[in-house]
Image: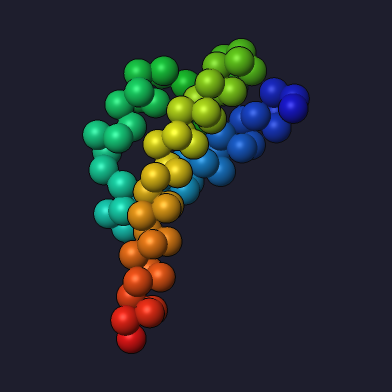
Length: 80
């Protein structure tokens, strides 16, 4: 991927992260490693590698929350 594409994916994941926090499906504490990187989607001056690393860290923080959310919603629909 090109740097521009990394930034785009990073921005999409940041939006997913924001939505999960807003929906209380993910705690802010889970993002300590991501925050420590100091690279956000708007950090366009940072190298592509920094965005790549941020994407990987965000994915590892988001994935368990999506799995939990999916499992919870599946259990709710089954119990209805």
